[in-house]
Image 1 (cartoon, rainbow, N blue to C red):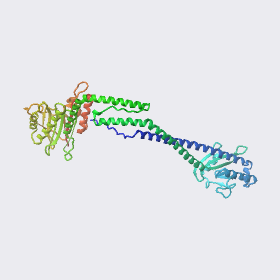
Image 2: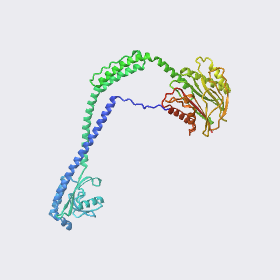
Image 3: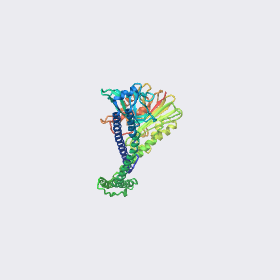
Image 4: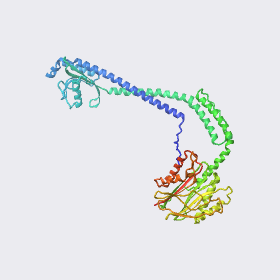
Length: 543
């Protein structure tokens, strides 16, 4: 049987809360977007300005270098007035423009050969003409980059470094060449970028504060407008709708009156209120008309519900006997729309014998359900008295015939099984033949003497049949709701199709067998309504 679809419950959140949350979320997202755009725009602007500034300073310093004396100074390591003036000018440029370092050098594989710099004597990083700064001062990668810049005019002239021993720097370089185009010197400058970080941090805080202020003001005005023009009118409609529903829930049908919701917004909400007013008027009129028409139908449906409760409440649902491993069983019943009187039952008679029974009462509704309950109780009482199975059927027939003014009857099958040996006595009162599904896979109908339907004729006599099953065999009982199920072509499901289906099963599990039968009946029916209960019971003698 298909499991009913389970719908996930939806948590109720007010419209005001949703609008407020959505508005604040949107405002927050916009603030973040504006801050990010402002940050990257301002950052790029600052970087461009620093690049232009430091590039200009490097070009200025390079123009001061006397190219014609560079080789002389390196060869003699002696300075003159021109060199001293150059050093003075480098110091002025470095100090007045907040450069961390301003320098000129010739890169070689051994390191950087100092030509001039703007660091004053005594300050950290001061070197003189001819000093060689190798890997003990500069990383190997910086020396390689300097050599590449010296020999390749296409190398980048701007670098930004983070996390080095020299701090967060922007560096610019220019290569001085002689008249023949040969490189003489590299002039470079380093400028600290910490100021940019501080400036950016302050800028972001300012933009964030302004954005939050603007959006907070906007959201406040927007929510005030939203409350007045949308949420409050909708709340009026909701309150009236709730009142109208509560009247229905209290079943005060005589007091239901159409509501008059007074909402004046001049838009779709006012149209909604007018539509709701009309709807309540229509519902009020419809309920009054429906009350008089459906009273008889409600009584019939109530009778069917009661019959269904009686039927389902009488059937055992516990198919497990933890202390017994000699057998297993399973049973199921799917009621038709118009409840009939199918039933099944199973119980121990004593330690070694176990009774299974199945029946199908004629008729529908409460009378059939009550007759089923009486039949089930009568059979169980007689079996527990240790009467032979044929006598159980005979006495049950006599008792059920009494006061049977409606002429109801029941097809009935009773089997009492010895769970140790597999031998069983059975009696059939006009019921569908039981099916024996052998351990080897073969399927056969249980044959023997059958009697007239129970409660049909008070003088009817019944015969006890004796059979046996082996360990691993299954006894399968069912009602005509299976074999008489019909499809769109008015064809019956039939015994042959049922036997064929059982013989094709690979899994010898009773529950799986019942599910397969039910599924095959549904496929055969092609959507045709189920007009009779479908009931089945399986008993397996375990190995």
